[in-house]
Image (spheres, helix red, strand yellow):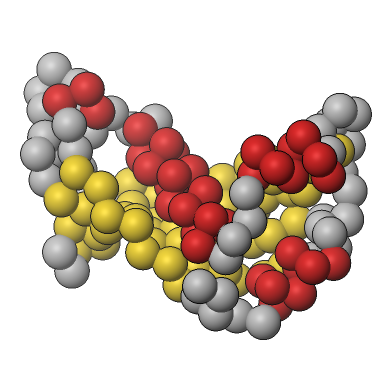
Length: 136
């Protein structure tokens, strides 16, 4: 399913995602964004487990700039959007947004680095993967 520059991933808020007041705990938004990026890769046929064990690379978060605009609550349906902004030789920049209906709750800039899974040093994104992403 290549050709997706903006990917949407629906989630529902469970009790375990919230604090005692029924509001989503701030770090859980990072988990939701991670799931959306993983599903975006999967939608293009990119299996991160295969990359780690066979190509010896991983995609890891290098930097996040996040703005919490409004809280989400228990049992709400949200949509996590993942938009590819830029791709370099060894890093990818995303804008990720979390919406409740049409209301923007979270707006984040996420930089992901491609690293060697054994040495944990930056490496080039494999050409076939980069070409797939650039074709979006």
